[in-house]
Length: 123
Image (cartoon, rainbow, N blue to C red):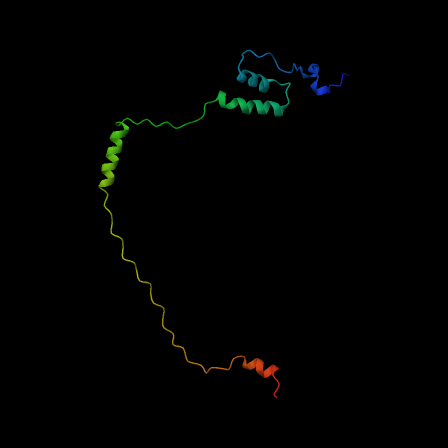
């Protein structure tokens, strides 16, 4: 051993686990990886996920408008919006007044009278 770890040895880096790839594009490589039964399932799944956007088109919505150009449609929209009537705002409703409760006056008491009775000693 010449001091090089086993994972860095060029002889260990060669790998013949894939079939020969026909094309030179990365999509061909990904297809070869996920089609190879020699690969672990996790590697094949990652390759299939990476290749999927290039194999199947994404669904998209396309609107085709045939009634004039953008300027003409904008002018018609501005004309329609100028014909809109504004409605007067309704008058704010007065909230109902709470009923008046008449209170009976009470006789004022000396502050802390109860405490004074309990703690102060007559001199």
